[in-house]
Length: 469
Image 1 (cartoon, rainbow, N blue to C red):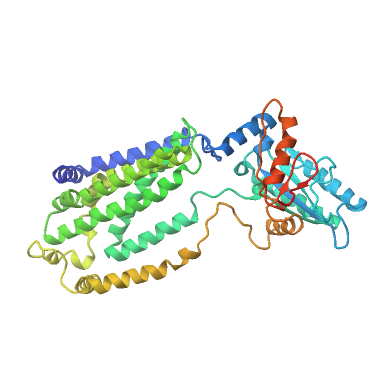
Image 2: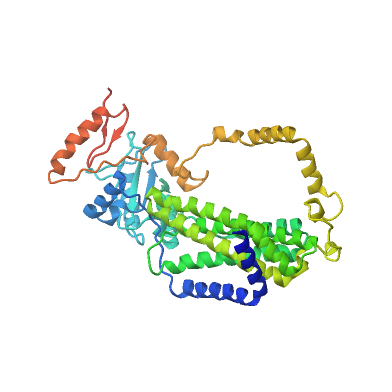
C-alpha cells in the first residue's frame, strides 16, 4: 500500500493543476445538483416493528391525521376562590375555545367543559383544551406558533390564567449555523498556532471544507431522488469536517518533516502520502466500517445517517491522498514557518534530526513524559477520573423541559398541581377490531384493576380512577 500511495502522491503533485480542477469541478457539480435537483426532507421518523409504530399507523388510518399530529394544551385556571365551571367562567372558556378553533392550521379543538369528555381538574379550578394539528410538530409553521401565542395572550384579558404547552410550540432543531462557523474559526486558529504558518493552516482547513461540501451537497442532491431525513446530513458534516482536518494534518505534518530533511517539494509530498497516507487510509476504512454498522440495526434513519457519513469519510480520505499533495505542490516551502524556510537541511535521517535545533515546548514536554512514563500515566488516569465525576450524576432523556418563566413551564406547573404528575404524558392503549367498542370497557376495567393506585384511566367519557389494590 505504501508504494501505491507514494505513486499516487507523486502523480497528484506532478499533475496538481489537473487534480485541483477535477475536485473543483466535482464540488461545483454537486453544488449545482443540490440547488436544482434537491427535494423536501422528512422531519418525522419511525422504528419498524415497534408496537408504538404500529399503533400510530392504525390511529392515523382509523381516525385521520389529527390522531397522531402535533398538539397544544391550552391550560385555563380560574381566579382564587372561583371554579372554572362557574357560569361566568364557563362562558369565558367557551369564548376562548371558539377563538382557538379559528387558529390557522388547527384541525380540531376540544372543549374542556364538554360533559361527554371533560378535562377538568378534580377541584374544578383548572381545565385544558387540546388544539390538534394534522401534521408533525416540526411541520408546524412559525406563523401558526405565533398565532397560538397571540391567542393565549389575548385570552388572558378575560381574567383567567391562560398558559400553553405542547410539542407544536417547540421550534425544530436547527441544523448548522453559528456553532459550526465558530468551530471552523477556532480550528483555523489552532492550526495556525500549531503550524506557525497561516498558509498551511488555511490549506488544511480548505481541503477539509471541500470534502464536507461535496459530501453534504451530494446528500442534498439525493433528496430529489429518494426521501431522506432532515437529520441525515448532521453526522456527515460533523465527522467529515473533523476527519478532513485530521487526515490533512497527518499529510501536512509529514510533508513539513520531509522538507526539513532536504527533500524536494515533489519528493516530500510523495513521501508524506506514502507514509502518513497509509495511516489515513487505515483510519478512514475503520471509521467507514463502524458507520456502515449502523445499517445492521435496522432503523431507517440511523442507516441513512451512517451511510451518508461513511460516504463523506471516503471523500475525505480521497481528498487527503490526492488534493492535499496537489495543494502542497503549490505552496511548497511556505508550509513551513518563515524562520525555517531558509535553514540548511538537517543532517541524518533520525527523528531528532528532522526537527530544527532548539528545545521548544513540545520537545521538552515529550521528553518529560517519556522519561517519567509511569508517573505521567498515573497523573493522566487521575485527571481523567476527576473529569469523569459528572458522569455519575448524568441524566439522559429525550423529553425536553421548558425553560423557567415561559408559558410552557407555567402551563406544566398548573397541570402538575391541579391534575397530578403524568397527565401530560399518557400511555395510549389502542383497541382495534370488529367489536372494539364493546370490548373497550373490559380493557378499561382490567387496566383500572392492575395499574398502581392513583393511576388515571381516561376513556372516552368521564375520568375513572384506579381503585386501590
